Amino acid sequence: MKISRSLRMLLIFGLILMNVGCDQVSKSVARTHINARETISVIGEYVVLMKIENKGAFLGFLSSMENPILKVIFLIILPIAVLLFILRMIIISTDLDKYMIFGLCCIIGGGIGNLYDRILYRSVTDFMHIDLGGIFKTGIFNMADVSVMLGTGLLIISFIKRKEFSIS
Image 1 (cartoon, rainbow, N blue to C red):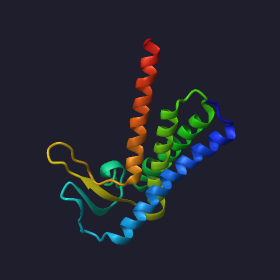
Image 2: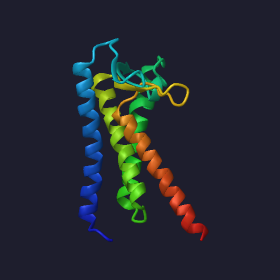
Image 3: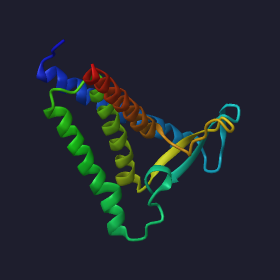
Image 4: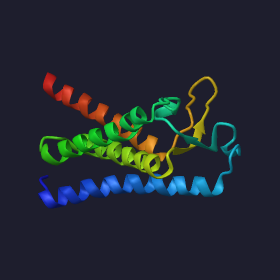
């Protein structure tokens, strides 16, 4: 089904804004209702809430970087450039399937959510942790990270589906 360019743009920006909104609302609740060093059980010891301020990237990567110029380049300027490139690709490309569009919008929305925190608060609020024993364990993360991971998963699905069709 073909949709008009304006409706496509509205859907793209709406999806991005929904991702940013969910992220920012959840972080606001975490900042307001979870105290430092507090652990709130959601599902036993398997899913807990605990607030930390991450001054780096994913799982604290680059948090110990001492050069402020390099830190701004790697944590703000480079991510903005990448997100703008991805947004441009979504807007210009007409051959992207729904999984790829949805996935890229999630990645952009999650990226914007964490960038917003880095610029406004100089850190990113992370507050969720999952530990399923020896089966699965995460670092402490937030909804922006969930958006990025969901988006990445959708991109993988898109690539697999494209590969299936090109083999036939």
